[in-house]
Image (cartoon, rainbow, N blue to C red; front, side, top):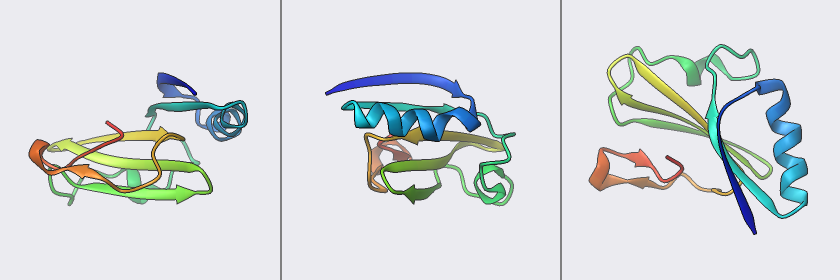
Length: 98
């Protein structure tokens, strides 16, 4: 199986492309821009969330995670390779997807 790592997916493209690649036995892991309407607003807000916290969303074979690495910073990641909410407790709760 081949894995592609990428930054800043175009949100409208990501779901269809990710599923097409998965059908060809290719997984994808990468970041998303926060300003896309397809991403729920609960995942894009850093205010009020603790540093090291993560929120996960699962849809068929796609996993979307919102991670707070530092105060007022939110990182969104999409993966077809990871299918759980595993985090690394040794690294301030950093998701395995990161």
